Each structure stands twice: as C-alpha cells, then as structure tokens.
Length: 379
Ligand SMILES: *Cc1c(COP(=O)(O)O)cnc(C)c1O
Image 1 (tube, rainbow, N blue to C red):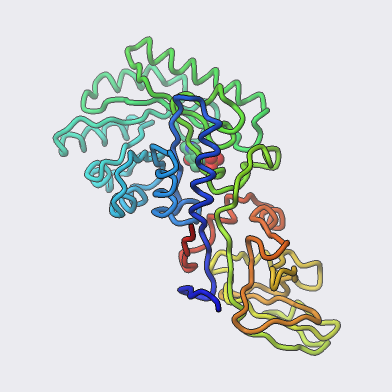
Image 2 (cartoon, rainbow, N blue to C red):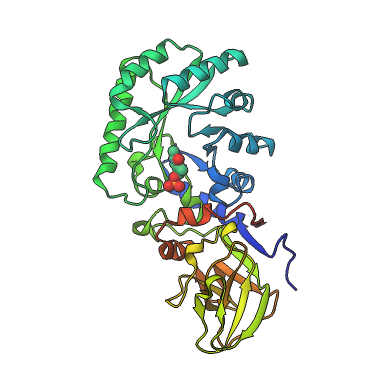
C-alpha cells in the first residue's frame, strides 16, 4: 500500500529532522546567543509555516524573512514569535508590516523616513534593526556613512534602533581572512554608532557557516538558514556537524514501457537507445523546479533517480511536466515510488549531487522546487 499524496510528484519535509538540526546547531551556539530560523523563500522551498513551527518548538526564538508577504503568511498561521524583515519594506507594504508586528530593518534614509511615517499612522514608536555593510556591498549602511545615518536617526524619534547587524560575504569559506576583516569592521561600526549615542544591546552577524565555525561571530543571535535544512553551507563544511537533510523529492512512475533499440526519447529525440530499454516517465519537469539543464542527449546523463533501491539515469530532454529514465533491462510498475532527492534502500541522492551537476549550490536546488509541488510534512 502506498500512502496517499496530493499529486504523484511531491516533496517530503521531515519536521523531525528540522527539530533535531535546530537543537544540534543550537548546542554549538554561545550560551546567550539566540537562534533565528531563516525561513525566507518558503523556507528555502521546504514550506515556511511547518518549518517555522518546528524550529520554534526546537528552541529558535526569532524568524527571518525577506518579504512582508512572507511575514504576513506566518502571522496568518498564528505564529507569534518575533519576525525580522531582512530587507527594507517597500512603501506599499510598510503599514501592513507594522500591523502584523513584523520588525522592519533599515539601511537607507528613505527607508528610515518611511518607517517613521508609518509609525505616525500606527500611533506608536517602531523598533527596527539597523543593517550595516561590512564589505559585501549588497545591503546595509556603508561604514563611512555611519555618522550621516546617525544624524538622520537623531532626527527621527519615531524609530528606535533595537539591534545592529551585518552579513558575511562568505557562506562557505569560514577560514577566509575576510571573515575576520568583516568582524573588525562590524566592531568599528558599533563603536562609531556608540560614539554618537546609538548603542543597541542586540547585535547579530552569523549565518549558518559562522554559526558552525566562528563563535567570535555569534553575538546575541545567529541567523541560520541552510544548516537548519540539513544541508552544508559549502563543501569545506561537510560533516562538521551531523545534520539530517529535511527535503526528499519523490514521484510515482507515470508510464513504463519497453522501447526498442534505435528509437529515441523526448523532445528533439536527443537520447537514442542503442539497445532495448525500459523507459519510465516521471511526472514532473522544469515547471516544477527540475531544471531542463538536467537533461541529456547522447552524452553521460546528468542526473539519476532511485527506483526499488537502485540508481537509474535520467535521459533525454526534460519537459515542462515530465522527464524520462532508462532502466535498461530492469523494470517497475506504474505508480512505483521514484526518489529524485533523498534515499531509498542503501542509495541516496543529495541536493549537492544535483547542484554539482548543474554548476550551482544546494541552496538553489531546493529553493527552486516550485509551488506546484505539494509539500507533505512528516514527523
Ligand atoms: C539568507 C540569509 C541568512 C541565512 O544564510 P544561510 O547561509 O542560509 O545560513 C542570514 N542572514 C541574511 C541577511 C540572509 O539573507
């Protein structure tokens, strides 16, 4: 008997693994360092509400998202924990952010003024986290504008800076000397703010990589994403802590047939059978986040799947809603379970395997699994 699923292609999300990962990472943090579970982008594709709840149960105290809409979804699900917006809220959504008790962050004078105006409309002062740029040059007040920004803050009593934070330019190279450089720039930024009377007690800087390897970057909170999902921030950090992958991607075989030698498979007939084979159609494709770049023609296949505990190559062009597998002389039945990410028997396929086939990182592989794929929670 197979368990019912909402669609014959689904992602299984092991919330028990989320809880265990959060607890294990939490043990590595300094004693007074809080755990922010970063659940942006639908929890890196894992399903934000379920993951957020599991993380909070396991000891996380904050949640981090990018968009106001992402924070509102969590509130609508009844989650009451503090939620930090990691980008400035746009003018169209700042009132909604405050109405939903999302904590804004600020790094531009325009953004500061918008929060101030929204605070007026909400008839309350608003606490915000100030982001400083310590070298990534993405988002944050540049260090040499700190004093200018502090002057703007002094004229904006409606906004209270509750925390100062920054972000590392490396998520995968904890031994890079620039990590220490950013820490010293962060200390400098904090000193310069303090000199002009801005001295929030709360500081945070660490991502997963720094949470796992740099206690000197833990401060008051670590913002943990990828490691909580059981994935390594990068090859250098593989195995540094025992983490369990949270997502498996599965499907049921949609069609199984013998195809004679000389026939070819899928758009463009790029995969030609040299000998007869069992071709299995898997009912998900690039519209579901199984990239077309995983397709193959005559050359070596770029991806494999597991059927009955054995590995078989994905062959031919990936279609919008399906791709094919060649089982050679083996066979299976329509409806049999196929594992695309995860384990079956003794075999396993990781998000990292797909990432290296695609020339990307595990973050992108799991995050791009589309909303068409139902998330089925376990544990
Ligand atoms: C996404 C994000 C994180 C989490 O990074 P991981 O490498 O996944 O741990 C932390 N901080 C900010 C600002 C982010 O945008």
